[in-house]
Amino acid sequence: ISDLLNYGYVTGRPYLGVSTQDVTLRSRDRMWYYSDGTRCVLVEKVMPGSAAEAAGIQSGDLILKLEDEQITSGDALSGAISAYKPGDKATLTIQRDGKESTVEVTFGEYKPQN
Image 1: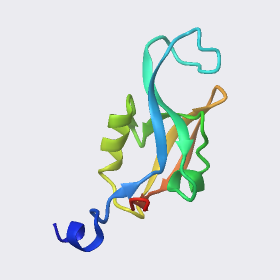
Image 2: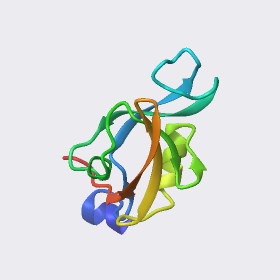
Image 3: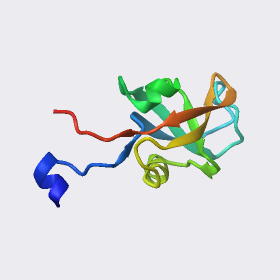
């Protein structure tokens, strides 16, 4: 409550800095190479100056895992991120242009934009 009174938001919340869309991949999706029915998140936008931008995440990337946890929805991604603190590092497994790779991200702190 004191954070809300003093800052107008809760401090110490980790922040990746992406907006995402839940997707279910199908074999006909030529740019994505996963079996039918695989669920993950598509990065629609990377916020300027965010942890995601610093890690090299791009619009159009698929986020498949955070550490060893399969990411099947935006809610799952948010839940997984909430286990971290600002400044913590984690490995994301992404797919870009049909190729899977990992990136290390250092979470920022969520601060609402004015």
